[in-house]
Length: 127
Image (cartoon, rainbow, N blue to C red):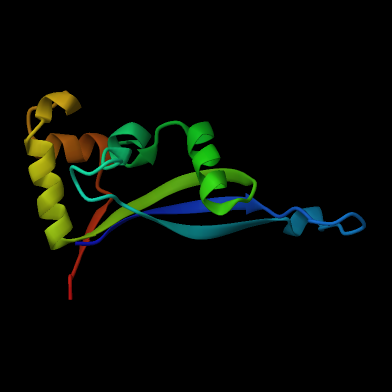
């Protein structure tokens, strides 16, 4: 069972030593970051509910702070790309959501997925 949140993160390069500088026009770069999605029901599995809204980062400042922790680099911006999951993970995610729809203030699993992930779920072949 595999799941990953995928983000595009714009980082700012800062010299680690005195006497070294970076040309300002080349000091930012965008990288793709894969953050492992905890198994549904496990600690941290509600990351999508707490961080995303309609397939976008709900609070960019918070997301930048998270990305800075993940990368140990200064982060300028973060955008959510997708939740990549295999079929087994997706089935487990839907079952965990269905088991507690009230926590999502929703009437169906599809409403929850749309509310928090928009159309940004990609189910991949598990092989």
